[in-house]
Length: 298
Image (cartoon, rainbow, N blue to C red; front, side):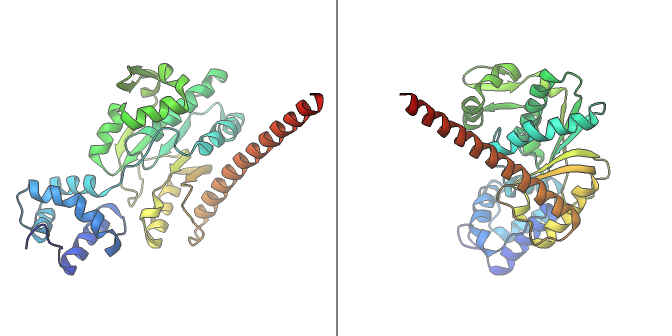
């Protein structure tokens, strides 16, 4: 079979099964074009004639499995992604946690860390909080299933869109927590001493992770089917302290999942977003009232 031709249905289904087996991600025919695009160059690099031969290589090589995982996982992230989540953590979560447990180290899990921006953002938030609360101690663990993307996270070097996004959103933090120039930046030691990265499959029980006070599991569950979501959430819950906070993605609905940690995750996310919206509404009313007073005076 020519690599430029579509694989037959049985081969496509076998590749979907491999994705699920190694990552837990559920794929179907709607994702075939995307999967084919990601695998095609790899198959050509290996000099294989078609997808069926690639399946044989995949079955016999642990090294190829690692490359396969890197190819099929999505690593879309940025610094301070979804600003209102970070607003909630800075204004509500950290002060509340500090009031109750300041003598203990805060432990945070970035459970799908990708290239590291989420973990480093959390560290910047903690460092900013420490300016007013020097007694804060914290440790952040970032995990991902992809060895390749974890290497990028550990390196902590950023350029292009990721760097520009941070410069635009929080320009005052760049000289404080990074070194570099206009072309690229690198995380400094103030953050590195608090952040570590390691490989972890969310389908696995986290036997040597935790317990955590805060878990960020954002924009991950959308890639799993219902049973996969239940399994992942059950595993994450095992690594959480009693009363810990779980943050999920803005677009992720957990209403179909009935396990107890799901209710916690949903309630926390809903409270975080509703509180942020309420603050924006109050700020808008204050600005409107101020304009009205100025108009009356004029």
